[in-house]
Length: 137
Image (cartoon, rainbow, N blue to C red):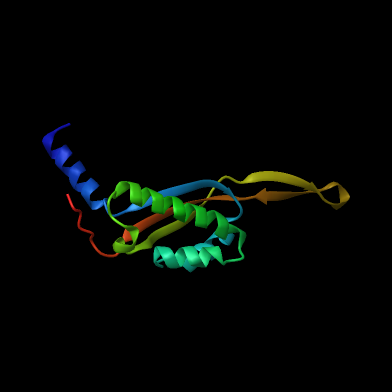
């Protein structure tokens, strides 16, 4: 790797130091239903987002709660020695994209068939720190 390439890679890694992201793929359920829940936590602090997901009645909230806990664990592993409370983490970006659709056929009257689409989705969640955190090293 050349010197310029290495310097750019180090700069990019430093810029991503305060971020932690996770992806959840092939989640059964329509993306439209998942977006109802993701809109509730977009831009919220990590602790508040966990509370919202914990007490939500939507089925998608359980999966998102687990995803958010995974993102917190990733951030903690990336930034060892820094308490999560000091970092003031928030949901910087959350995106729901459509996944694979399973196509099934249901019999209909007079010899016809109706198509059933079993949708799935994929969720990308990125946590960020509101303020820069100083390391002890």
